[in-house]
Amino acid sequence: MKIKFNYIEHEFIINKEQVMSIEIENKKYFYRVVYDFYKLYNGNLSNEFYCYDEQNHEINLNNKIKIFINFFDFSFDSKKYANDISKYINSHISEQDKTSLLKLYTKILKIYNDILNDIDVSLSINTEMDIDSITKIMKIQTKLHPYLLDNLFTLIDLEKILETNN
Image (cartoon, rainbow, N blue to C red; front, side):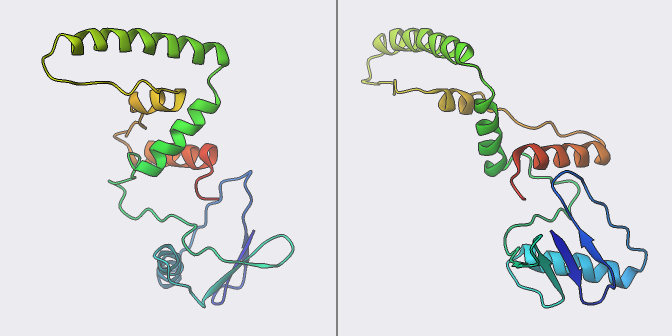
């Protein structure tokens, strides 16, 4: 993908295989570039830059980018990341492990059913369980590190592996 800003003479070429870093020393241009991306992130189209694919067809990036301005809130615990991480993990669980997990869950269900039978209130458990539900129960989350650079690397790794924002 190519990005061309009206106010910068060079175009930027972005591909999936590399992480790109842009260094802008001019404070006014830096602000303009970040502001244009921020407007796009919020759903507002900008006439200041354009994105093109390999065949030079214009690409609309509206609502397809993510901007991190607050370096204390990376949204690692967002529902979007949780769902994407669950899907990624489930795609990497072997059939043998899935079978083992479902057997263990069946044992847990039996124990809970015994407990519920001893209670005077009519309660039941939804016994329809699949590996997706078990993974969600585990509440797997991304670790937040005490150092900004570590969190940025984690963010890059997540975006690369999960491909949430192409």
